[in-house]
Length: 130
Image (cartoon, rainbow, N blue to C red; front, side):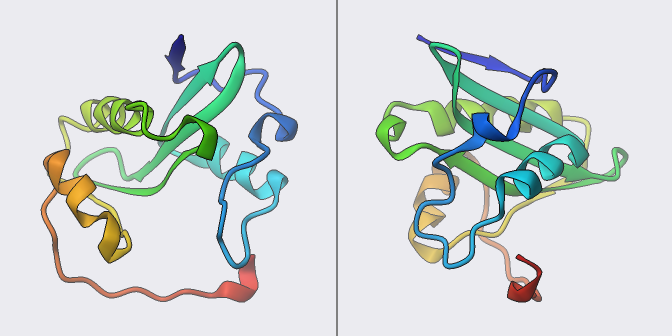
């Protein structure tokens, strides 16, 4: 059974192993933990106490938010965990004007099924920061 929580107390680097599969330069466990603690909102998915997925949101808390990461461990994908994580984080932002995220083209249909709309945007990536 999967449980969901916004409580990060007791979360440690070792809880976050196995995420960012296929990333050319994934964040370190310390960076990962720091990002979650620095986020406006976070929802964690656990199975038998182990973290199997998470989503985080950065926001001004007034009008806008950005969802930088949604990750589910490969062994737990295809079970609706990512969908539930997104449902919960978007519900946390119901009072905001806009919630944005950036994804690869292959993931657009997934996010469109969750009610998001494709937008045109720009970005800057400093891969050396990782």
